Image 1 (cartoon, one colour):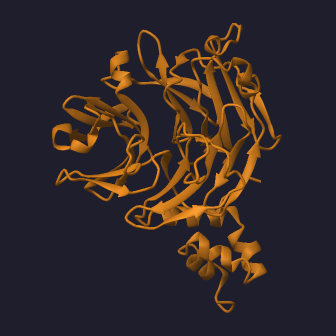
Image 2 (spheres, rainbow, N blue to C red):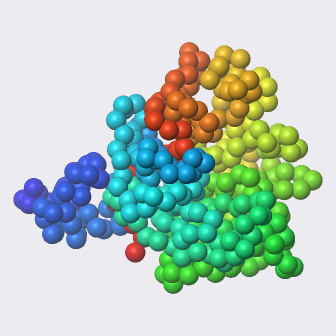
Image 3 (cartoon, rainbow, N blue to C red):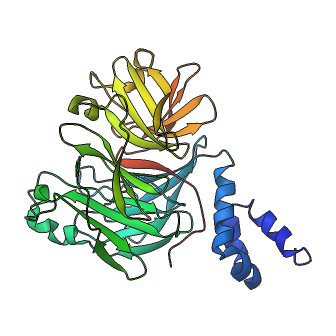
Length: 367
């Protein structure tokens, strides 16, 4: 290998998995410093993994109301289609965290209402703790508060910086200020939170987590008319994107989920007897129906005598979709074959208290 040209070595390394590359850092200091630790190489390697056709999932343990549970593990990862999952050792095994709805470049963001958040690379096991934001510092005093906002995590596509964001309705969390919403963003360079001013001019629904897609975070707006609010993480400005053709009432919102498929903003809605997934074309500013599921032929969608809306996670090839089922006692991952209409449990686990999201294994960390 040492006799090969540098660009040939990079070409080979880009096609290796992260675990192998981490071993190579102990073999050659030159490989470590000039290739493996280089951000441009890490990005190319990640994109190659993304194009490989494999779907990777990280499972995050959630509080299930049972208190101490010996079966709960902080993190697990798996490749869809494999029967083997990998436990990721952490220093917070005895603490429960929520997880932001979107992974970004192989990184996930864990949070809890009062505690510092943690940005984690499940593949390399790198992590960095984030101090509590202003909302979290005051949350203990509002312990009986009915609403509980969720943060978002994404990336400024222009500058390449990562940004955790808390957006919440000011009055609903007890703030007596003129702005109807408050927005906090974390700056990794200063290790501090700051406000985005002006914040959103629209109230948001706290019941649904924000979703990252194409450089922006997205929320459902709250009011007489439901729209989708986008925060551009580069300009740090808010705008409302053209609403989907079906979002016009609270009833529809309850049965709707924002998600990201094929790196496009999508909304999944359930209107009996179908669950339909719409995709947004950011250039044409139009919505297109891309999948339609006949619920009468999908009995797995029915739990406790009611029909539920599963959260779409990924497209598996041409004919399969991967969904997250947060209420299943068999496992959190469900696959649906669009051609045969056959549903299957993609991964079985001992406990149901897992949140699942797709991610791309990478070497990336935040300095």
